[in-house]
Length: 292
Length: 252
Image (cartoon, rainbow over the protein chains, first blue to last red):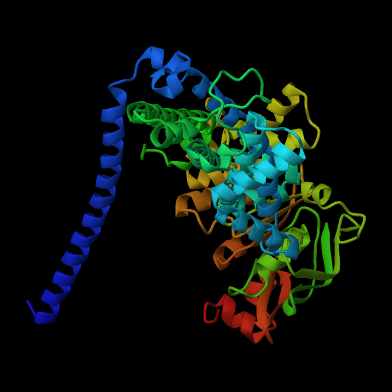
C-alpha cells in the first residue's frame, strides 16, 4: 500500500470516528435529561396527581386544573394558528418561481417573527390581548399569544411541504383542466399531509414548552378554569413556579415535567398515527411495491 | 384538425421557437422529431397553453383547434385543455386509486352519475388494454402499477375526457422496451379516432407511427421547423441536406 493510500485510510477512519462520537454525544445528552426527569418524576406519579386539585402552592395535591388549562391553551392556539398558517402557506407556495415583493415581505416578516424571543411575545400579548382588547389575564389571551408565536413555524413547514409536492402532479392536473382548488384539495394537501403534521408537532411542542410568553398573558391562577376568559396556569409555568418560587417544590416540578414529556410523546405518536392512516394510500403509493 | 401559423414562443427575452406553421388533419398522427433543445416540447406546450404555467413565457402567432383560436383572450384555458389530452415523458398518475385517477377530472367537469363514471372508466381502460389487468383492483394506488401500465393509465385518463386532440411528449422514452412497444401500438390504434401530435427522439418510431413528420432544428439560437411533410417524403426524399443526414442517422 502506498503512503497516499494509507493517509487516505487514516483520514476516512478518523472522520468516521468523529461522526459517531458526536452522534453518540447527542444521544447521551438527551438520555441524561430524559432519565433524570423520568426517574425523579415518575416515582411520585399517581392517578390522584393527574386529577386532583392543587394544594399548598403545589407542594401537595395534584395538577388536574393545570392539565386542563394547558389543554385549553393548546386548543385555542391550534384553532387560530392552523387555519391561518395553512392559508398563508398556500398563498406563499402558489408563487412557485416569481417571488413578488409582497411574498418576500411576508417571508421576511415570518423569519423576523420566528427570531423574536418568547418573553417579547409575552409582553406583546399582554399589551395587545390582555389590555388593548380587554381580554385580561386569560386562557384566550395566552392561546392567542402562543398562536402568534407558532405561526412562523407552521407557515414555513407547511409551505415547504407544499413546495415538495412533485410539480408533475400539477402539470398533469392542469393538462386535464382541473382547477387550482381541486389540485390543492385532492392532490397537493394529501401528499403534503405527513410533512404538515410534522410541522404541527414541532409547533405544538414549542407551545407546550412555553413559559415566558404565558406568565403575562394566561397568568398564574391555579384553580380549574371555568371558561376561556378565566386565567389558567400552564404546565410549564407551573414547573417554573415550583422550581423557582416554592421551597420544597422541586419534587413536584420533576413530576410535572415528566407528565409534560409523556404528553408530548403521546401527542407525537397520535399525530403520526393519524397522518399515516390519512395518507395511507399515498404512502403505499410512494413506496414502490416489494420494498415494504 | 389543428393548425398553427407563425407560432413563436419567448422565454423572457430569449426566443425559443420561431415561426412554426403546421397543419394536422383530423385523425392523423404528426410526429415531431429533432435534436434536444430545439423547441419541440415548447411547441407542444404552446398548443394547450401549458406555457401559461411557465413564468416569463410569451406566445405569439396563431393556434387554431377545430377552427377556434386558442390564444384568444376569451378562451378559458381549463376548457381548452379539457379538449386536448396531454401525455408526458414521465408517467404521472396521481397518488390515488386507479379509479379516482380516471374519474377525478370527469367529476370536476360535471359528470356526477355513478353508472356513467363507471362505464367511462371501463371503456377507456379497455381502450388502453389495462382493463383485463386491473379490473379487479381499481381501488389500488395507481403508483403501484409498473411504468408502462402507469403510462397507459395516463393515456386512459386523458381519453376519458373525450379530447379532440392528444399531445404526447416522448411518451415511450422513460419506459422499458416491452412497455414502450405496448404504448406505441396503443398510440397506433388511436389513429383515425384522435388527432395526435407526438414528440419523439426515436426516428424508427416516428416512421412506424406517423402520417406526417415535422423536423425541428436549432437555428440562430431558436428552434424552428426546417422541413415537414408526409412520413414517406421526410424519410425517403427530404429536400433539406440536414434532414437527409439526420434521418440517415448521421446527424443530431
